[in-house]
Image (cartoon, rainbow, N blue to C red):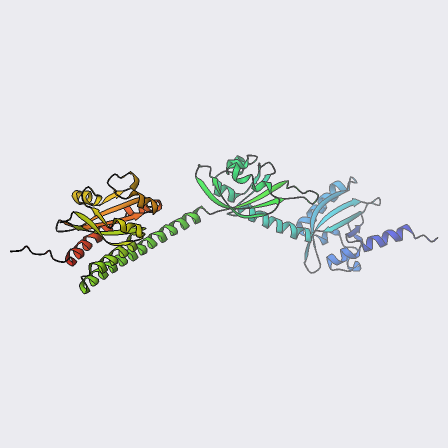
Length: 426
């Protein structure tokens, strides 16, 4: 069995390893360098031989090497520190140098290329700075909900410094019922809107993303990262925009209502100018009142002063049963009461009104409330309008002031459309 010389094996190992190796004598003159070191320095071994090690370093690193050689190396102590090699073309390479004294008095140095590590560290440093100085709050909590880290963005949003808040429970800034469900899940949760509490006790609305930290060998999160963006101003702006929009919409609706009211006034006037047919006018009146008031039903009665009754002229929203009450007594009626007090009567609960003559019909139609408006002309009673609504609409009906004004025009139209009273016999 053939065996190789140990020196040969060692040389092959050194020449093929990924670490840079340099060897020097007592005066730090180069006696050997492996291919990796030659590659870093952009020089051949022949170019390096005899050169002192200090020539391969930048100024600060060369100073460090001299210091170590004059202290640790003379006492036979190994050392490890970072330095920067400068190649033939001036390219700088950060390395980790491990130096060991040789029995002969020289030194052997092994250098690890730190360029990739430095790049990674720089990226991490930039990322860390972005997190630390960002305007969004970035905080970490353990699985119990205790705050472990806290950036400047979190201080800006919630008011607490890092020293004030670390190791405090998350309930310091959020209610327990809001955040506990978030810490019970193992998936990332995006844009969860929460209301936090600032140090000054003011509410702060934030949009939170929750990122669980799960190690590969575990299934349950060991910690959580919370990223919170302050949307308090955004929500306030949205509320202001919504309020302005609501005002514009209300104004538009009001304009539309006024326009519709004017249309009905014009149409009633136009109809009256074209016909004095009381039935045609009555049908238009009850339909227009329904459209303007959104009532469920409307009846229009004319007052017959000689007979002392109120006759049904037109109706909308009631069944044929109502025709059985086509004529009702004026005496002790709600129309009489409204006429005598000179104002409409608002009956919230029909069933509790003793003067209402047909409670069974109202109940059958699910009518809860009624608005009785006396129709007059120059102090004379012409008739009465009755507007009926179900329980859901009663307040809406009673807040409609236009119907009462519209009733003034109705009184004029109906008075003018009535046939003249027969003259007395001579």
